[in-house]
Amino acid sequence: MKRRDGPVRDNTLWTWLPVGAQVLLAALANVASSSTLTVFNAWIFRQGYHYQWSLIVVQQMVCAIFAVAQVACIPGEARRVRISRKDYAATLLPFSVVVSLKLYVQNRAFELVSPAFYAMIASTLPVGVTALSVAVGAEPFRVATCVAAGVVALGGAMIHAGEVALSPVGFALTLVAMSLDVARLVLVQRLVQPLGLSSVGLMLLSAPLQCVIAAIGAAVLESGSVAAAASAGEFTALAWSLVFLNGALAVVVNLVIFVFVKVASAVAVAVTTPFKDLAVVLLSDQFVVRRTETTTSIVGFALACAASLGYNVWNIGVKERERRDRETRERCAEQYAPLTGGSGSATDSRLKFTPMEEDGEEDEFDEEVDAHAGVWRIADAHNATLACVGTAVLVTCAAILAQLDYSAVMGR
Image (cartoon, rainbow, N blue to C red; front, side, top):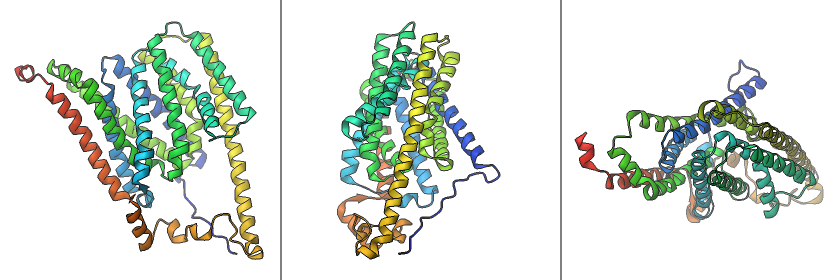
């Protein structure tokens, strides 16, 4: 049986640069952009901007528009956007709620704790992810995993012990944000990944939902404060510029991650996380809350980052060996299938994609099945984006305008 090879992807973006140099530049850009956005968020809140939900509305609105543009520009990406109405409501909606709450709680924590402390505590995230993944059966129980989690937890305890002045409420918000981040990562692994969406498709479908969720939060919790600030003339052109600059930074972060995944992989993005946390610590101590970290915190942070990075590298190797073993078994099954009279796989051959389907071109029968099964495609995603973003803008603006003091505004 002739084996069909998949299409070869050209991951290079700048042909005059070696691939290694491209990966290094993309990694540095990812660390710089992600840490800058985190520190810029904290700086805005520390300067008196206390409207976290409204800022999330702007961020997710910009991300939704950026996702539409990305899907339109990437060849074949539009054909990959496919999700049933049931999965949209039962999977993406809970995921979007968790992400929105995580962003809000994280932003609230930035008002009470240093971003440097938050970033150092965030380095212990693998402990919670590992524990929850093993509990729900997403990852097998391994002794090495438990050892790494224990070392990371020890580093987290040292970080907490080394913090000189710590707000109890801020620390509680930090723990809640970490818990929501753990839930987000496990939801991605257990619910979102099986949908087969790319990272761009996931952003296209989830960012508008997060925009609506944040708009509801802004209307209920912040519209009165925003209206009062606008009536008093506190929303200057500089304030609006900073808000939209924050949205522009969110676009840059997503663009850099897209480039990084193209020249390397999503795994490489995860490996750079400790370096991003280190950059946040350095920038925060210099520009947001000027302070010097204690020796205990530095040692704990180094211990947590080293254990996390070492475990990630080891886990990548394990998964790569498992992938190669699985491919070897599949090739052997295909090779001996004519002798055994089987299909060469536990999966019926009728369920395998044809070459045309691999290229994203379905026949009329597939489109008819999609229509009857209630499957959403790219046109539905665009309609949902337009409806969600429009609703978010309408809800937020209506709530603020309803409480605006027009006499004070007109008097200026």
